[in-house]
Amino acid sequence: MYLLIKARIASKLELETVYTLDEALKLYALYTMDVDIERAQAEELKTQQQK
Image 1 (cartoon, rainbow, N blue to C red):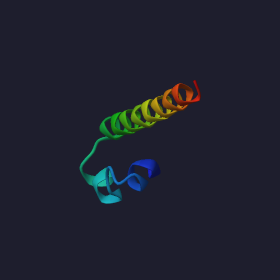
Image 2 (image 1 turned 45 degrees about the vertical axis):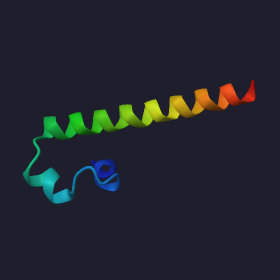
Image 3 (image 1 turned 180 degrees about the vertical axis):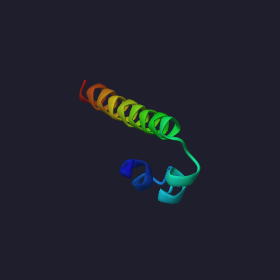
């Protein structure tokens, strides 16, 4: 859950009081998917520039 706080998606207080564990885990999954997509797009752009 530290990543959610670090990425400023949710504060520690929000994670403790507002979100259920299921909701927090869904936020984490969405965040990691977004990071993976950005990484893949960057790699694709790098590959295209090398051609």
